[in-house]
Length: 419
Ligand SMILES: *Cc1c(COP(=O)(O)O)cnc(C)c1O
Image (cartoon, rainbow, N blue to C red; front, side, top):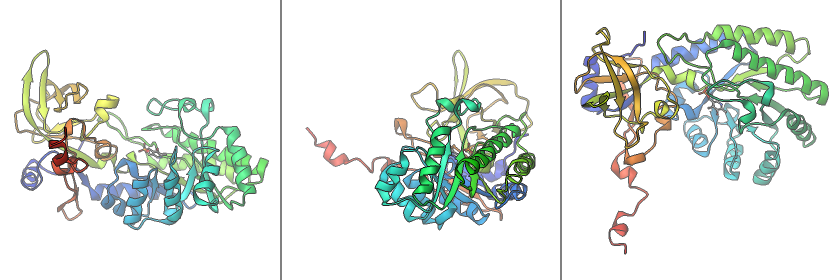
Protein backbone atom coordinates (compact mmCIF):
# COMPACT_ATOMS: atom_id res chain seq x y z
CA UNK A 1 0.00 0.00 0.00
CA UNK A 2 1.48 3.34 -1.10
CA UNK A 3 1.27 6.08 1.50
CA UNK A 4 1.17 9.87 1.53
CA UNK A 5 2.01 11.82 4.69
CA UNK A 6 -0.80 14.40 4.58
CA UNK A 7 -4.56 14.13 4.71
CA UNK A 8 -6.98 15.64 2.20
CA UNK A 9 -7.77 18.40 4.70
CA UNK A 10 -4.12 19.24 5.23
CA UNK A 11 -3.52 19.39 1.50
CA UNK A 12 -6.52 21.65 0.98
CA UNK A 13 -5.14 24.04 3.59
CA UNK A 14 -1.63 23.84 2.16
CA UNK A 15 -2.86 24.63 -1.35
CA UNK A 16 -4.29 27.97 -0.22
CA UNK A 17 -0.65 28.95 0.28
CA UNK A 18 1.03 26.89 -2.45
CA UNK A 19 -1.02 26.30 -5.60
CA UNK A 20 -0.77 22.96 -7.37
CA UNK A 21 1.14 21.38 -8.87
CA UNK A 22 3.99 20.96 -6.38
CA UNK A 23 6.45 18.32 -5.25
CA UNK A 24 6.37 17.52 -1.54
CA UNK A 25 9.21 15.75 0.30
CA UNK A 26 9.03 14.12 3.73
CA UNK A 27 12.10 15.00 5.81
CA UNK A 28 11.45 12.41 8.52
CA UNK A 29 11.12 9.61 5.99
CA UNK A 30 14.29 10.74 4.17
CA UNK A 31 16.25 10.82 7.43
CA UNK A 32 14.91 7.45 8.59
CA UNK A 33 15.88 5.88 5.28
CA UNK A 34 19.34 7.48 5.37
CA UNK A 35 19.91 6.06 8.85
CA UNK A 36 18.69 2.60 7.82
CA UNK A 37 21.13 2.61 4.92
CA UNK A 38 24.04 3.84 7.02
CA UNK A 39 23.33 1.32 9.75
CA UNK A 40 23.14 -1.58 7.29
CA UNK A 41 26.35 -0.68 5.46
CA UNK A 42 28.32 0.18 8.60
CA UNK A 43 29.52 -3.46 8.56
CA UNK A 44 31.80 -2.41 5.68
CA UNK A 45 35.04 -0.53 6.36
CA UNK A 46 34.66 3.25 6.36
CA UNK A 47 31.44 3.13 4.33
CA UNK A 48 30.13 6.35 2.81
CA UNK A 49 27.15 7.11 0.60
CA UNK A 50 27.66 10.00 -1.83
CA UNK A 51 24.15 11.16 -2.75
CA UNK A 52 23.78 11.55 -6.52
CA UNK A 53 22.90 15.24 -6.62
CA UNK A 54 21.32 15.02 -10.07
CA UNK A 55 18.46 12.96 -8.61
CA UNK A 56 17.12 15.87 -6.53
CA UNK A 57 19.39 18.91 -6.78
CA UNK A 58 17.85 20.91 -3.98
CA UNK A 59 20.26 22.54 -1.51
CA UNK A 60 17.91 22.04 1.46
CA UNK A 61 17.79 18.30 0.81
CA UNK A 62 21.58 18.28 0.38
CA UNK A 63 21.88 19.85 3.84
CA UNK A 64 19.63 17.20 5.34
CA UNK A 65 21.61 14.39 3.74
CA UNK A 66 24.95 15.95 4.69
CA UNK A 67 23.78 16.12 8.30
CA UNK A 68 23.14 12.36 8.05
CA UNK A 69 26.79 11.90 7.05
CA UNK A 70 26.32 11.58 3.30
CA UNK A 71 28.68 13.06 0.77
CA UNK A 72 27.62 14.19 -2.69
CA UNK A 73 28.16 12.73 -6.12
CA UNK A 74 28.37 15.53 -8.69
CA UNK A 75 28.62 15.39 -12.44
CA UNK A 76 28.32 19.01 -13.53
CA UNK A 77 29.36 22.56 -12.70
CA UNK A 78 25.96 23.43 -11.25
CA UNK A 79 25.99 20.40 -8.97
CA UNK A 80 29.49 21.29 -7.74
CA UNK A 81 28.42 24.89 -7.05
CA UNK A 82 25.30 23.73 -5.20
CA UNK A 83 27.45 21.59 -2.93
CA UNK A 84 29.90 24.41 -2.35
CA UNK A 85 27.02 26.74 -1.46
CA UNK A 86 25.81 24.43 1.31
CA UNK A 87 29.25 23.59 2.67
CA UNK A 88 29.86 20.21 1.07
CA UNK A 89 33.46 20.32 -0.15
CA UNK A 90 36.70 18.35 -0.28
CA UNK A 91 36.57 14.58 -0.29
CA UNK A 92 32.89 14.71 0.61
CA UNK A 93 32.37 15.31 -3.11
CA UNK A 94 32.84 12.57 -5.65
CA UNK A 95 33.05 14.14 -9.10
CA UNK A 96 31.82 11.48 -11.51
CA UNK A 97 31.47 13.30 -14.81
CA UNK A 98 31.85 12.38 -18.45
CA UNK A 99 32.89 14.40 -21.50
CA UNK A 100 34.04 16.82 -18.81
CA UNK A 101 34.65 20.46 -19.80
CA UNK A 102 37.98 21.97 -18.60
CA UNK A 103 36.21 24.45 -16.35
CA UNK A 104 34.46 21.67 -14.46
CA UNK A 105 37.75 19.89 -13.81
CA UNK A 106 39.14 23.17 -12.48
CA UNK A 107 36.20 23.80 -10.14
CA UNK A 108 36.25 20.20 -8.91
CA UNK A 109 39.97 20.54 -8.12
CA UNK A 110 39.44 23.91 -6.41
CA UNK A 111 36.84 22.31 -4.17
CA UNK A 112 39.16 19.39 -3.41
CA UNK A 113 36.65 16.86 -4.77
CA UNK A 114 37.62 13.26 -5.48
CA UNK A 115 37.93 13.18 -9.24
CA UNK A 116 36.64 10.08 -10.95
CA UNK A 117 37.87 9.93 -14.54
CA UNK A 118 35.60 8.52 -17.22
CA UNK A 119 38.28 7.92 -19.84
CA UNK A 120 41.98 7.21 -20.19
CA UNK A 121 42.48 10.44 -22.18
CA UNK A 122 41.06 12.46 -19.32
CA UNK A 123 44.31 12.19 -17.38
CA UNK A 124 45.92 14.44 -19.97
CA UNK A 125 42.81 16.61 -20.13
CA UNK A 126 42.94 17.04 -16.35
CA UNK A 127 46.65 17.91 -16.44
CA UNK A 128 46.04 20.39 -19.27
CA UNK A 129 43.11 21.99 -17.44
CA UNK A 130 44.58 22.16 -13.94
CA UNK A 131 48.35 21.87 -14.37
CA UNK A 132 48.77 18.53 -12.56
CA UNK A 133 47.13 15.36 -11.38
CA UNK A 134 45.59 15.36 -7.90
CA UNK A 135 47.06 13.17 -5.17
CA UNK A 136 43.85 11.12 -5.18
CA UNK A 137 42.42 9.74 -8.39
CA UNK A 138 39.63 7.36 -9.25
CA UNK A 139 38.73 5.64 -12.51
CA UNK A 140 35.34 4.49 -13.74
CA UNK A 141 35.34 0.93 -15.00
CA UNK A 142 33.10 -0.29 -17.80
CA UNK A 143 33.18 -4.09 -17.75
CA UNK A 144 31.66 -4.32 -21.24
CA UNK A 145 30.44 -7.77 -22.24
CA UNK A 146 31.87 -9.27 -19.01
CA UNK A 147 28.88 -8.00 -17.11
CA UNK A 148 25.20 -8.02 -17.95
CA UNK A 149 23.49 -4.73 -17.19
CA UNK A 150 19.77 -4.43 -16.57
CA UNK A 151 16.88 -3.15 -18.67
CA UNK A 152 17.15 0.47 -17.60
CA UNK A 153 20.85 1.10 -17.95
CA UNK A 154 21.29 -1.28 -20.90
CA UNK A 155 24.33 -3.35 -21.78
CA UNK A 156 27.62 -2.02 -20.42
CA UNK A 157 29.33 -2.45 -23.82
CA UNK A 158 26.80 -0.07 -25.34
CA UNK A 159 27.20 2.50 -22.56
CA UNK A 160 29.34 5.57 -23.19
CA UNK A 161 30.80 5.51 -19.69
CA UNK A 162 34.03 4.27 -18.26
CA UNK A 163 37.32 2.65 -19.26
CA UNK A 164 37.74 -0.82 -20.67
CA UNK A 165 39.59 -3.39 -18.61
CA UNK A 166 42.79 -2.98 -20.59
CA UNK A 167 42.66 0.79 -20.41
CA UNK A 168 42.09 0.59 -16.67
CA UNK A 169 45.41 -1.19 -16.05
CA UNK A 170 47.22 1.22 -18.33
CA UNK A 171 45.62 4.21 -16.59
CA UNK A 172 46.52 3.10 -13.05
CA UNK A 173 50.10 2.33 -14.09
CA UNK A 174 50.47 5.75 -15.62
CA UNK A 175 48.82 7.52 -12.68
CA UNK A 176 51.21 5.71 -10.32
CA UNK A 177 54.18 6.80 -12.43
CA UNK A 178 52.87 10.37 -12.34
CA UNK A 179 52.93 10.26 -8.54
CA UNK A 180 49.26 9.81 -7.72
CA UNK A 181 49.22 8.54 -4.11
CA UNK A 182 45.68 7.42 -3.43
CA UNK A 183 43.56 5.34 -5.78
CA UNK A 184 39.89 4.60 -6.10
CA UNK A 185 37.90 2.36 -8.42
CA UNK A 186 34.34 3.05 -9.52
CA UNK A 187 31.66 1.48 -11.64
CA UNK A 188 27.96 1.95 -12.31
CA UNK A 189 26.40 -0.91 -14.20
CA UNK A 190 22.74 -1.04 -13.15
CA UNK A 191 19.92 1.38 -12.61
CA UNK A 192 16.71 0.99 -10.60
CA UNK A 193 17.67 -2.60 -9.79
CA UNK A 194 15.59 -4.32 -7.12
CA UNK A 195 17.54 -7.59 -7.15
CA UNK A 196 19.99 -7.44 -4.25
CA UNK A 197 22.23 -10.01 -5.93
CA UNK A 198 23.11 -7.57 -8.74
CA UNK A 199 24.54 -5.11 -6.26
CA UNK A 200 26.52 -7.80 -4.46
CA UNK A 201 27.90 -9.00 -7.81
CA UNK A 202 29.00 -5.46 -8.67
CA UNK A 203 31.00 -5.27 -5.45
CA UNK A 204 32.51 -8.70 -6.13
CA UNK A 205 33.62 -7.55 -9.57
CA UNK A 206 35.36 -4.49 -8.10
CA UNK A 207 36.95 -6.48 -5.26
CA UNK A 208 38.42 -8.97 -7.75
CA UNK A 209 39.75 -6.11 -9.81
CA UNK A 210 41.28 -4.55 -6.70
CA UNK A 211 43.20 -7.78 -6.09
CA UNK A 212 44.33 -7.95 -9.71
CA UNK A 213 45.49 -4.32 -9.67
CA UNK A 214 47.54 -5.13 -6.60
CA UNK A 215 49.02 -8.28 -8.10
CA UNK A 216 49.82 -6.83 -11.51
CA UNK A 217 50.74 -3.23 -10.69
CA UNK A 218 51.45 -3.24 -6.97
CA UNK A 219 48.71 -0.64 -6.54
CA UNK A 220 46.71 -0.75 -3.37
CA UNK A 221 43.30 0.86 -3.75
CA UNK A 222 41.98 3.03 -0.94
CA UNK A 223 38.34 2.82 -1.92
CA UNK A 224 35.89 1.22 -4.28
CA UNK A 225 32.61 2.85 -5.25
CA UNK A 226 29.88 0.59 -6.59
CA UNK A 227 27.87 3.50 -8.01
CA UNK A 228 24.15 4.02 -7.62
CA UNK A 229 21.33 2.03 -9.07
CA UNK A 230 19.53 0.60 -6.06
CA UNK A 231 15.93 0.40 -7.20
CA UNK A 232 12.70 1.40 -5.55
CA UNK A 233 9.33 -0.37 -5.76
CA UNK A 234 7.40 1.96 -8.05
CA UNK A 235 4.60 -0.60 -8.32
CA UNK A 236 2.64 -1.41 -5.17
CA UNK A 237 3.13 -5.15 -5.68
CA UNK A 238 6.93 -4.83 -5.85
CA UNK A 239 9.15 -5.44 -2.86
CA UNK A 240 11.79 -2.88 -1.89
CA UNK A 241 15.46 -3.71 -1.63
CA UNK A 242 16.70 -4.93 1.73
CA UNK A 243 19.82 -2.91 2.58
CA UNK A 244 20.96 -5.53 5.10
CA UNK A 245 20.89 -8.27 2.46
CA UNK A 246 23.10 -6.22 0.13
CA UNK A 247 25.46 -5.11 2.90
CA UNK A 248 25.87 -8.65 4.26
CA UNK A 249 26.41 -10.02 0.76
CA UNK A 250 29.04 -7.38 0.01
CA UNK A 251 30.70 -8.07 3.35
CA UNK A 252 30.88 -11.78 2.49
CA UNK A 253 32.59 -10.98 -0.80
CA UNK A 254 34.94 -8.63 1.02
CA UNK A 255 35.87 -11.32 3.51
CA UNK A 256 36.37 -13.86 0.72
CA UNK A 257 38.36 -11.65 -1.67
CA UNK A 258 39.85 -8.54 -0.04
CA UNK A 259 40.82 -9.87 3.38
CA UNK A 260 42.81 -12.95 2.18
CA UNK A 261 44.62 -10.75 -0.35
CA UNK A 262 45.85 -8.58 2.51
CA UNK A 263 44.03 -5.53 1.16
CA UNK A 264 41.88 -4.86 4.22
CA UNK A 265 40.94 -2.11 5.04
CA UNK A 266 39.45 -0.94 1.75
CA UNK A 267 36.75 1.72 1.99
CA UNK A 268 33.46 0.88 0.35
CA UNK A 269 31.30 3.65 -1.08
CA UNK A 270 28.09 4.05 -3.01
CA UNK A 271 26.46 6.91 -4.86
CA UNK A 272 22.75 6.17 -4.91
CA UNK A 273 20.21 8.80 -5.80
CA UNK A 274 16.86 7.16 -6.46
CA UNK A 275 16.81 4.98 -3.34
CA UNK A 276 17.68 7.92 -1.08
CA UNK A 277 14.84 10.32 -1.89
CA UNK A 278 12.65 8.64 -4.54
CA UNK A 279 9.93 7.09 -2.35
CA UNK A 280 9.76 10.14 -0.07
CA UNK A 281 8.59 12.67 -2.66
CA UNK A 282 5.17 13.11 -4.30
CA UNK A 283 3.85 15.27 -7.12
CA UNK A 284 0.52 16.76 -6.06
CA UNK A 285 -1.78 17.89 -8.85
CA UNK A 286 -5.51 18.55 -9.40
CA UNK A 287 -7.93 17.24 -11.97
CA UNK A 288 -8.98 20.19 -14.14
CA UNK A 289 -10.56 18.63 -17.27
CA UNK A 290 -12.43 15.51 -18.17
CA UNK A 291 -12.65 14.28 -21.72
CA UNK A 292 -14.48 11.29 -23.23
CA UNK A 293 -13.37 10.25 -26.72
CA UNK A 294 -12.03 6.84 -27.64
CA UNK A 295 -10.74 6.77 -24.10
CA UNK A 296 -11.58 8.53 -20.85
CA UNK A 297 -9.07 11.26 -20.07
CA UNK A 298 -8.49 13.20 -16.90
CA UNK A 299 -6.48 16.37 -17.53
CA UNK A 300 -4.42 17.56 -14.57
CA UNK A 301 -2.60 20.81 -13.85
CA UNK A 302 0.81 19.08 -13.87
CA UNK A 303 2.55 17.94 -17.05
CA UNK A 304 5.75 16.31 -18.25
CA UNK A 305 7.40 19.61 -17.30
CA UNK A 306 7.03 18.42 -13.69
CA UNK A 307 7.70 14.70 -14.12
CA UNK A 308 9.11 13.17 -17.28
CA UNK A 309 9.65 9.54 -16.36
CA UNK A 310 6.25 8.20 -17.51
CA UNK A 311 6.49 10.15 -20.77
CA UNK A 312 10.04 9.26 -21.72
CA UNK A 313 10.48 5.78 -20.24
CA UNK A 314 6.87 4.64 -19.97
CA UNK A 315 7.69 4.39 -16.26
CA UNK A 316 4.94 3.40 -13.83
CA UNK A 317 4.12 5.89 -11.08
CA UNK A 318 1.36 4.94 -8.71
CA UNK A 319 -1.49 7.45 -8.42
CA UNK A 320 -3.80 7.97 -5.45
CA UNK A 321 -6.93 10.11 -5.52
CA UNK A 322 -6.85 11.85 -2.13
CA UNK A 323 -9.84 11.03 0.02
CA UNK A 324 -10.74 8.10 -2.25
CA UNK A 325 -7.98 5.74 -1.09
CA UNK A 326 -10.44 2.98 -0.28
CA UNK A 327 -13.01 3.71 -3.01
CA UNK A 328 -13.33 0.92 -5.59
CA UNK A 329 -11.30 1.42 -8.80
CA UNK A 330 -14.29 1.30 -11.12
CA UNK A 331 -12.96 3.53 -13.90
CA UNK A 332 -10.21 3.24 -16.51
CA UNK A 333 -8.48 6.55 -17.20
CA UNK A 334 -5.57 8.07 -19.02
CA UNK A 335 -4.21 10.76 -16.69
CA UNK A 336 -2.69 13.44 -18.89
CA UNK A 337 -0.95 16.82 -18.81
CA UNK A 338 -1.48 19.74 -21.16
CA UNK A 339 1.63 19.59 -23.36
CA UNK A 340 1.14 19.38 -27.13
CA UNK A 341 2.97 16.10 -26.95
CA UNK A 342 1.05 12.83 -26.89
CA UNK A 343 3.55 11.24 -24.51
CA UNK A 344 2.47 13.71 -21.80
CA UNK A 345 0.64 11.05 -19.82
CA UNK A 346 1.16 10.14 -16.18
CA UNK A 347 -0.86 6.95 -16.48
CA UNK A 348 -2.36 5.02 -19.37
CA UNK A 349 -5.48 2.87 -18.98
CA UNK A 350 -5.20 3.00 -15.19
CA UNK A 351 -7.90 1.59 -12.93
CA UNK A 352 -8.91 4.35 -10.53
CA UNK A 353 -11.92 5.49 -8.55
CA UNK A 354 -14.31 7.90 -10.27
CA UNK A 355 -12.49 11.25 -10.51
CA UNK A 356 -14.32 14.56 -10.22
CA UNK A 357 -13.02 17.93 -11.29
CA UNK A 358 -10.98 19.47 -8.48
CA UNK A 359 -9.96 16.11 -7.04
CA UNK A 360 -6.41 15.94 -5.70
CA UNK A 361 -4.18 13.38 -7.33
CA UNK A 362 -0.98 12.26 -5.66
CA UNK A 363 1.64 10.83 -7.99
CA UNK A 364 3.96 8.67 -5.90
CA UNK A 365 7.73 8.14 -5.88
CA UNK A 366 8.68 11.43 -7.50
CA UNK A 367 11.39 12.26 -4.95
CA UNK A 368 14.25 11.40 -7.33
CA UNK A 369 14.61 12.10 -11.04
CA UNK A 370 11.28 13.94 -10.73
CA UNK A 371 11.43 17.74 -10.50
CA UNK A 372 15.08 17.48 -11.54
CA UNK A 373 14.28 16.25 -15.04
CA UNK A 374 11.63 18.90 -15.67
CA UNK A 375 11.86 21.14 -18.67
CA UNK A 376 10.12 24.14 -20.20
CA UNK A 377 8.66 22.78 -23.42
CA UNK A 378 5.49 24.61 -24.47
CA UNK A 379 6.63 27.28 -22.04
CA UNK A 380 5.36 25.21 -19.12
CA UNK A 381 6.74 26.26 -15.76
CA UNK A 382 8.39 24.00 -13.24
CA UNK A 383 6.65 23.72 -9.91
CA UNK A 384 7.60 24.55 -6.36
CA UNK A 385 9.25 22.01 -4.06
CA UNK A 386 7.91 21.78 -0.53
CA UNK A 387 9.36 20.05 2.51
CA UNK A 388 7.32 18.46 5.28
CA UNK A 389 9.43 18.96 8.39
CA UNK A 390 9.54 16.62 11.39
CA UNK A 391 7.42 19.09 13.41
CA UNK A 392 4.63 18.88 10.84
CA UNK A 393 5.20 22.30 9.28
CA UNK A 394 5.68 22.65 5.52
CA UNK A 395 8.35 24.95 4.11
CA UNK A 396 8.96 25.94 0.53
CA UNK A 397 12.44 24.85 -0.54
CA UNK A 398 12.09 26.03 -4.13
CA UNK A 399 9.50 28.45 -5.42
CA UNK A 400 7.58 27.79 -8.61
CA UNK A 401 8.91 29.33 -11.79
CA UNK A 402 7.18 32.40 -13.18
CA UNK A 403 6.80 33.67 -16.73
CA UNK A 404 9.40 36.28 -15.82
CA UNK A 405 11.87 33.46 -15.11
CA UNK A 406 11.04 31.87 -18.43
CA UNK A 407 11.53 35.12 -20.35
CA UNK A 408 14.59 36.22 -18.37
CA UNK A 409 16.95 35.27 -21.19
CA UNK A 410 14.94 37.14 -23.82
CA UNK A 411 14.91 40.85 -24.63
CA UNK A 412 11.18 41.19 -25.37
CA UNK A 413 11.44 44.97 -25.89
CA UNK A 414 14.07 44.56 -28.56
CA UNK A 415 12.06 41.77 -30.17
CA UNK A 416 8.89 43.90 -30.30
CA UNK A 417 10.54 46.47 -32.60
CA UNK A 418 12.84 44.07 -34.45
CA UNK A 419 12.56 44.19 -38.24
C1 LIG B 1 22.67 8.70 -12.06
C2 LIG B 1 23.91 8.27 -11.38
C3 LIG B 1 23.87 7.81 -10.06
C4 LIG B 1 22.60 7.65 -9.29
O1 LIG B 1 21.80 6.69 -9.85
P1 LIG B 1 20.46 6.20 -9.08
O2 LIG B 1 19.84 5.27 -10.07
O3 LIG B 1 19.64 7.43 -8.87
O4 LIG B 1 20.88 5.56 -7.84
C5 LIG B 1 25.07 7.49 -9.47
N1 LIG B 1 26.23 7.59 -10.13
C6 LIG B 1 26.30 8.02 -11.40
C7 LIG B 1 27.61 8.12 -12.04
C8 LIG B 1 25.14 8.37 -12.07
O5 LIG B 1 25.21 8.80 -13.34
